[in-house]
Amino acid sequence: MNTFKRLKEFYWPYKKYFFGSILFLLLVTAITVIYPIILQITIDYAVIDGQHHIIPYIAFGFIALMIIKGFATYSHQFLGDLFGVRAVYELRNALYKKLQYLPFRYYDNAKTGDLMSRLTADVEGFRFFLSFGFAQLFNLILLVGFSFGIMMFYSVPLALVTLASMPFLIITVYRFDKKVHPAFTQIRKSFGRLTTKVQENISGMNTVKSLSREDFEIDKFVDKNKDYKDRFIHTSNIWARYFPIMELIGQICVVVLLGYGGWLVIQGALQPGQLVAFFSLVWYIIGPLMNLGFIINTFSQSKASGERLLELLDEKEDIKDRKDALSIPRIQGHVTFKNVTHQYDEEEELALNNISFDAPPGKIIGLIGATGSGKTSITQLISRFYEPNAGQILIDGQDIKQYSLISLRQNIGVVLQESFLFSSSIRDNIAYGNPNASLEDIIEAAKRAQAHEFIMELDEGYDTILGERGMGLSGGQKQRIAIARSILINPSILILDDATSAVDMKTEGKIQAAFREVMKGRTTFIIAHRISSLKHADEIIVLDKGEITERGTHEQLINNDNGAYRRIYDIQFQDQYVVAGVSQ
Image 1 (cartoon, rainbow, N blue to C red):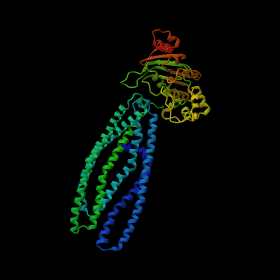
Image 2 (tube, rainbow, N blue to C red; image 1 turned 90 degrees about the vertical axis):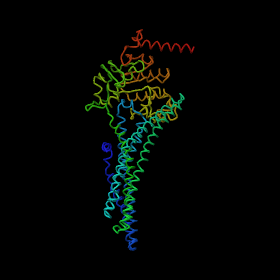
Image 3 (spheres, rainbow, N blue to C red; image 1 turned 180 degrees about the vertical axis):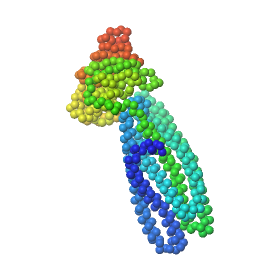
Image 4 (cartoon, helix red, strand yellow; image 1 turned 30 degrees about the vertical axis):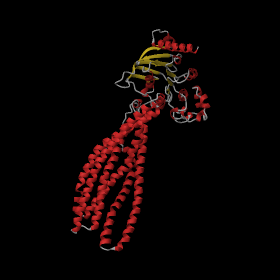
């Protein structure tokens, strides 16, 4: 029960619903075990002794009990559902909140489909046991306890003889649980892999179709689906092997009851009605104990789900505010790197090695280099998406760890190479970082990003609802909306991670002209592969394998004939020359 103890904070505040449900369950169970008593009275007194006058009273009492039981059953089920739903409402909120604050390092290896499975199937599995499984467990205990008490009242010897095989049933159920719980844990993991595969396929459908890999994707899905099917069959096999054994033990109890009980009736030590009541009561014990397998089945699924939920809740938030973190509305944007070294994983090479530079407020810093050279790593460290392994990063002379994450990131505008847009209106997407912005401010930001013109060509203009991930817009249009979104928060530090890679040269020129105005007074970091995007930078830093190999202005670097920057320039210039020659 350790899993449920650790998740107690989510359901215990709603214990009044749980205990209310159990109270009505107690009433339901008490009425249930009265049925055999009514049957015994009817047979022994109304039928055998001929006391026919009590039959109307028995019938009236039975109807009254049924009405009471109906009300109690409704109350029990409603309060039980209320208990489970309220609990997982808090749990689901906590899980989603946890996802928002987990560092980038976690998402580097996390699978979207698996996370979705945890927030849906696993949460629902845990809710089902809270609403249904706990109650069934208490029902089993109450029903067995009440029934055994009445059986002892009727005949102690018959009760003890009949229930002699119960320990064997309990041992069988215990062994069943030991096998079925690991099986259900594997089912949950397999389901997570299956949903991950579906999510990846849908997200990458353009790539799949463009490369005609539909059959390959189908085969991969079939493999994942087969694994899920095989694990379910394995679990069903466990159930199929143990359930007949449990049923056999129960039938042995019935045979013993009928044999020994019938002999007691013949000897006059037991009334016929009592034997009939005994027969009903023994099934009130055997049935729940056999149903214990189903309860354990539910418990095992819920426990497996709870363990997966705890794995997520226990993930370490290694990037968070200090207790004395500074909350500053506006920073100047003076960025300094002092001997910064960063490594994403201990088994990987250094992403950055002993990086030092100074970017005064309002300066433009260009970052260029081959893929994997460390350009994006620098900008991610500025925003504290990751923590460096060594060295120090300062903003306005303060270590960035001194600032609260909110005040730091609200002063940094980031436009990534792959722009993400939400499934909402263009207006809401642009205002995402500044939801209180007026429409006039939104339009002004869009104009600066060269997005206003194409937005107004859409049927609904700024109220146009975008499809998932901005479907319906070109890559360049999505990027310009992302640029407008960044401009609108009025950041002190602006990071453009290859922000114009998806636009044509003409549009890039317009955006660069707009950026020159936007960059005034802001510290700007530009990651680009086109030298045309870096020419106006105050300093260009050339990176290779996490180290700075060159630095200087465009003119200084272009004059270094043996430098990497000059080689990049020559390649791009040659490409432009070849294209121009072909067009002629």
